[in-house]
Length: 259
Image (cartoon, rainbow, N blue to C red):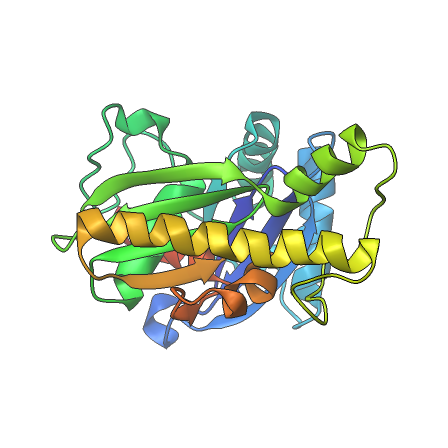
């Protein structure tokens, strides 16, 4: 089995894949809060509990580990966990020098986040380029892949939850609401008005940026991933595919290229 870990600023997703010869199927995946205070031993305990749902043990059934992380302290803890508990399994951490099979056209390729690289590689493994991959995470990232399969760059905007946190902090009379689609665009209550601005306003932002990217890339396949993709994605006219596990797919592909 291949263990893949995608650590973001807010949440960490852990996935378990069949070995390459067994079909590369995602057996299961789990989402937990990102906590830089967790030690390698605590992470190992959590991983073993997840694996135990399917009757697996990391000391017998995990034959490889792939990691994408944007939180340095968690990256270090994951390395320590892999060395201590998966010492016989190859470890691949997305970082400069790792083979991705994708030319990076950024001015400084080392600046591109590991999750963005994994998203681009995962999207290219599933769809025909050019591609725009939209990841709804702590930040919402837009990653462009050219018709030649090159990573062209992209855009980064504050995530929808960050935007709402700023609104609540700076507006004394506004309050937190559930992030769901309201009954109408023209809100009749404060709750509906906030939901309309957040949901429909953000979907319009996504559509606008995607269309501007397509002006440079040409007509593209547009793929959405991330924790809020299921909320915003269906309301975006430009998004064609929802791939909640896109980052994990990219991790699997990169692991296979490096082992």
